[in-house]
Length: 434
Image (cartoon, rainbow, N blue to C red; front, side, top):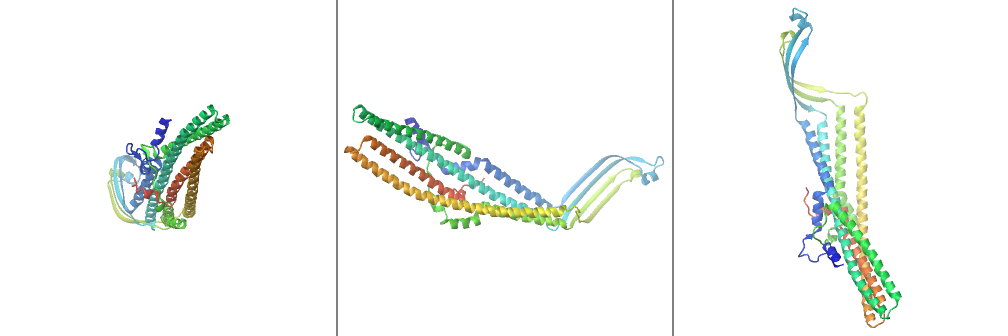
């Protein structure tokens, strides 16, 4: 039993902290942000979108084309027939090289719109990284508090079991001496078995909490875990104030607005296809072959090329309609996101207020149970209550303590969940991005 108690205390609060290194909430969140695949995936998406911006911007600059041809050719036309005396055809080695530089001069704003769309998507992906970090910070916080809670309630139950075992032994002595009957020892053993069943459940809860912690943080707790500080003072003063601020600052809402902007630019880019394009071109072509098949050639040009394509099948109009529909979809999803975030905020504040009120009630109930226990102990000394009654009262106090302990962790978790719902949790840790 003592070995189990020592094991549980490693993950409990505060004791022997000078001898064993501490595992703080900040450590756990930092480890999760550094190692969790979801953050790596979000960063990779952001990097990919940044490369898309570079890709689209390249259209601002001229494109260079180089070509070379080498081989043997056969020609039978008026030139070969005029320059040969037999068969009217000729063979020749052909060497050809060409180079051209093309610069877009006018494209109805298509390039600029595609660049702006790519930049907006990059901005959105960077905000998505922040939101991913926010969600992961909350998961790491919840798993950290979950391990603490499970360890603390298990430690409390094991301490109470020692007390129950002591009561059971004392009652057994009284039964052996004829001071108490067998029904009392049976009731005492029943309480012990109930407690044993509770402890088994708490052990399972702790193992499940550790598994969740390992999944989120990427490792098991290293050293003593300290109960996180309360963060109620970092919360907005009211749920309405929190909802209003989130509409302006929440990373997921800002990301959806960037996606809307990107869709708008993409629609304008598709509309550009209905207008002509003008390109400037510098080119040089040089060919070396026999006179019989055309002779040497040098062709150097500086020209303007206009291209105006008309798609009779309706593809251009279909692309515009598709881009317009995508814009409407993103706009609807933005509204849905805003509603979901406001709902999350209101639910988080409701949970915070509920847990706060219940904690106050349970603390008062624990105080009453403690007063009752002290009164029964005094009455026991005066032989006014039996030892079994004292044991039962002690068990009631234990239940009240457990409920208060669970309520304290629920209230603490609600504070961090409320911060996360408004997009402020990750910043409250002041953790640098990758």
